[in-house]
Amino acid sequence: PERMIEFAKAAANNGTKVIIAGAGGAAHLPGMVAACTHLPVIGVPIQSKAMSGIDSLYSIVQMPQGVPVATVAINGAHNAALLALQILALLADNNITEQLINYKRKLKEMVENKANEIEQLGYKSFLEKS
Image (cartoon, rainbow, N blue to C red; front, side, top):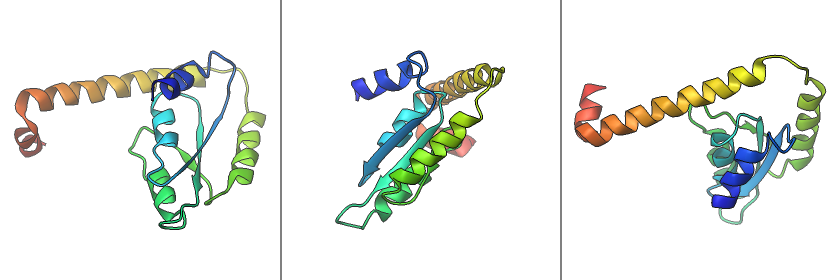
């Protein structure tokens, strides 16, 4: 996981504009990458033997608010590449990147504050309070 986190965090500084991440089974890779970068992430669910890729699809498409992953069809790497090209075609210099970085920073702070509150109160008291 450390290499994936390092890759995702450094991707923007390395000139990457869009990330395509394929994964099968529980398919956590696209979501983990998206949680570590402000860049757009396209998830490609890979067909598995157990559930023919439905498990991968559900894992990638059901991301929490604030961690978007664009999801294409099972084994849809071709469409993922086309979507990445469409995103790249729209790029222009503006302040959207800075706004995305600030949004991710604020989201991280919010999650850390809630985690601290849960640790202080205990999860039962936290849920009763919420």
